[in-house]
Image (cartoon, rainbow, N blue to C red; front, top):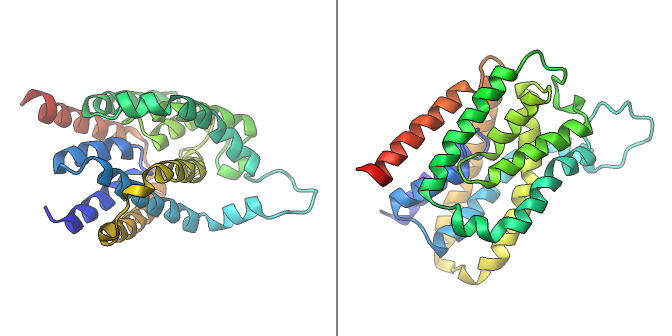
Length: 266
């Protein structure tokens, strides 16, 4: 298959799945296996298209990011999201991810482990929806630092490919009294520093693998991932205003079943 076509396909997959609770890593592993797009070149490409997905959140939530990093006068009523909330949400997964990075890459990046993650993550979301009642935190700016920390603990589950960063954090938010929309927005916001650090870390290890011949493919994937991620976030937030996570859980079960048949049964 033409490399530019592959760039479009994988760019769309990354953009659609990065912020929806269906696991971008899991889908990238499965689609990469289906297309035969694996190895060092695929790793380089995937880092850059993740940066495209990051850019979409930075643009959509630019006011919140600017507000968090801009010095403000004292006397605030505290009804706002701060860098402290973000740090509380990302430190747990950064510590565990750093300590277990090598074994995770070595043993968990396969279709079989992704299938397990898809099913387990779907079950978690259904349990969270069953537990969910009237939220006390309806907007992301109303969340407490303790909520941010406990939601961050749930994000550790996403280190298992197929579990989904957004799926685990949104489920965690529902368990700790947040609305679906507030939990989703916090998931998007804390994904930015995490993904950026992970991308830079991976990029430093693969810089020598970059080739001028790959720039066209990388540029196509970056733009496609950015546009698709932007549109998927806008759609997802509207969806959560009137729907639950159940449909995403059932989708995950279907993908897991089809993947199991394709890779291990047929």
